[in-house]
Image (cartoon, rainbow, N blue to C red; front, side, top):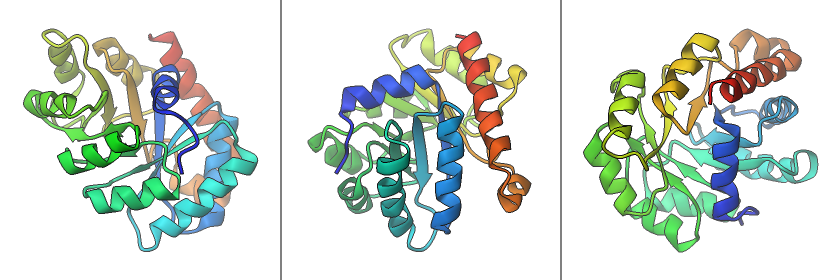
Length: 222
């Protein structure tokens, strides 16, 4: 069961400005990555449903966070159907993210007062998602649907829109300043925060450093 209320989750997403996006089939590695992010100041983390038995790894990660990262808000990503969303909500997901907008997932999450952040590629999709109760919409793949210019043009007629950009986001001054300058609420960031070499070598301090630096850049550009 989710440990954090909907408002608490949304406030953390807004305050942090960055949601790391990660999957690994090995629970020991997933724990190390989660801890490295936590030590870097991250308080919202999206584990993705991308491999066999991902739900088992997520369940163990939730238990680990309870003991070692008590302020970490764990969510689940890459969900496209309501049945899988229900499974993860019961396993402890505090928010749900998907690459598409599925009204059935919105209903499931609304019933449990859990934030649902769907993937949208057009203004109409964002509008439909907002009608279904989605406070934050993920533009995805952000670099392909128009980048920062797309965000800026959405915010002009719909200034209330809260956007998470995922895809083509990097932990650099140039990249993050463009996204936040355009008006995103937060960004989702995957492989650029978790270089494969660092994971393979167990270089967790480098991941912590990347997180700290990215969060610093975000705060400076708000």
